[in-house]
Amino acid sequence: MAVTAPPSGQPDPENPLTEGLERLPVAPTTLVIFGATGDLAQRKLLPALYNLAHDGALPERFHLVGVARKERDHDDYRTECEEAIRRFSRRAPDAEVLGALLANVKYVPGTFDDPAVYASLSDVLDGFEQQAGEPLNRAFYLSTAPSFFPVIVGELGSSALAHHEHGDVRVIIEKPFGTTLQEARELNHSVLAIFKEAQVFRIDHYLGKETVQNMMAFRFANGMFEPLWNRNYIESVQITAAEELGIGSRADYYDSAGALRDLIQNHMLQLLCHVAMEPPVSFTAEEVRNEKVKVLQAVPMPTPEQIAQMAVHAQYGAGQSGGESVPGYLEEEGVPQGSTTETFAALRLEVDNWRWAGVPFYLRTGKRLARKITEIAVTLKPVPHLAFSQEGSLGVRPNQLVLTLQPNEGVSLSLGAKIPGTRMIIRPVNMQFQYGTAFLSQSPEAYERLITDAMRGDATLFTRNDEVEAQWRICDPIVSAWGDSREPLPSYAAGSQGPVEAEGLLRADDRWRAI
Ligand code: BG6
Image 1: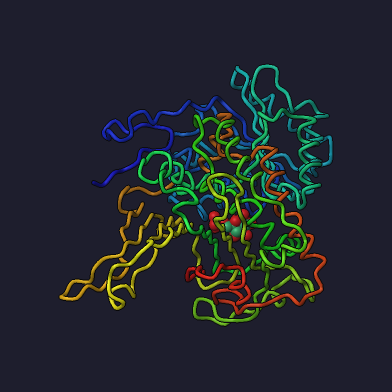
Image 2: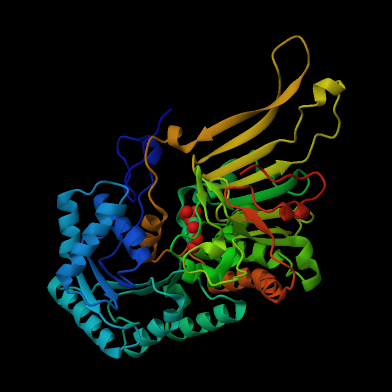
């Protein structure tokens, strides 16, 4: 049966499957975006706000304030917002909805360390409240270079903006949350000196993806998987986040990050947590995050000797992508000469607990690989005995459950089936569920869900302080071992499956899935 989904936050009265989907309304809020003219704000945040407005999912009283260094007046900024929305929104904007959203937008220019900026901001926020005749919640979104996070948080504290007598104040912090364990701890320390943990929303946009949330539904709303979901039946878990694109114009950021910090430390470890966590007692922020932290704590911190056996990094060279010749990483604009930043990283991790001991979790990510694919493949153990003839058994493969997060979101299960005919010959076939055909609706962008959750004060899909530190605990030793390494950095051709060295991580019977 085809199912259409209601706009976010609202039940669809025509559709029995959406009963009970009402969520708490979002209280009147002013959202302040620091870094308001930057790439993320333009490409993701403003379009997300437009789409929320379109779905009626913003509070009835909603204001937006952009803060950035560039000199602009309110009207210039409104025009800039409109252009960004027209360019990047998943829906063509409706003039009335767009007009109503932009009417409530203001801009404060200045540098993030200048107390005068916070004084102006405070006036704007007070002005909105006077106009509304009621206090408004405040959400500060830090969409800036990470070096400004402690600066902005400190200034919000000293300008008394971190507290509001009559409303809630929240701070939303973009990634990367630190570049080492030490930095993450220091940042947590600075943030938690001003805000309470319940006011802090650390973004990992993967958690806002429909398909990542669907993993919870898949595991905890279906009885059939739980008996199999352990070391007795599962041979290995393989998580891939491959990208076809290179680093584009982001050399500045990317060269100091690399693939491990950019994707594994946050997004991919979150995916691992979703596969490995125990069912939470309830879907509250604390219960869900408690279970995820336990998974991360069960991943042993690799010793320097182990790192060479369980981690591979590499950099792309020139090659073919989308039918065109593309340059190698070192020839990309803005990349320092001789950079040894990895654009590919693969790890073999273990989760040392009762459920998972001995099951390898393979994580692999890279830029300029053959195509864009994000998936989780769970391979079951082979059957203990094959009664078929040798010819019949040749095509028998262990069952594999694949959750595709993007593109073509869905779930598939491979099964062995007899090929029609007079002989008993078996080959794998796939049973498939696809989001696109099962629910005839467009999924909201991750940021739409995350922005409303943060304004609502629901931190379930955000990373807690101990969680982010537990992620760094796993990645930190690898980052520093790679930094100290004198071995030449392996390379792979752009558009390929990645470096051959990644094969070395696999156990004898395991194979990387084709990208
Ligand atoms: C971001 C990384 O967090 O995630 C980017 O900084 C990466 O380098 C992106 O391209 C991938 O996100 P998605 O949603 O396209 O899988």
